[in-house]
Length: 193
Image (cartoon, rainbow, N blue to C red; front, side, top):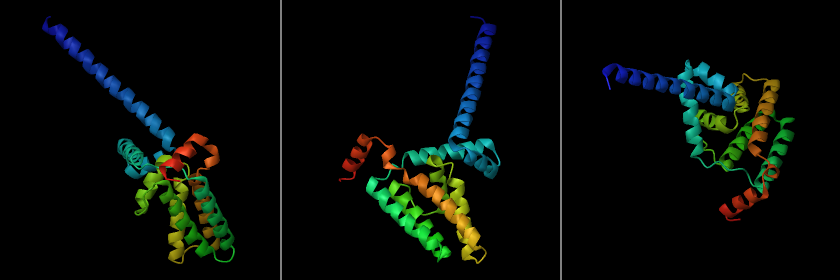
């Protein structure tokens, strides 16, 4: 084989590799945009770069895949739903306490599902993988709660925080009625019930 043929083969192979990389990158971007929705755009804006944002979102996916997130059992979901009803009733007389309790119950549901609790930004990142449509609500509700702690939030702001927390709460609750009975039976067996 002469040198020109070798150069041509190498050039073609390199061109195919570059084209393959571009196609892979395009598909990855498209998949991440679909999966994360508004959170994708939020992360691009925060990171200042699409490639950095996509690397962050892909890392989130890998982290959450290792967490063993599980749906709630029917009894757990009912207990949390009852607690939420009490919190919403409490809002009329003590909005600030209701918002504080809403944050607490959302954290308890997250913990029961398998999400680690601790650093708020890590919680948001973890939640964004499975609940991208409501993660912005979580940020907004927490911001209002922090404003209230500084004496800067009105009762209307607190009402809006409750609406935001409720959206995340409902998404996290993951009704067992929507899951097949075989999945629920496996969860009971795994949890020793």
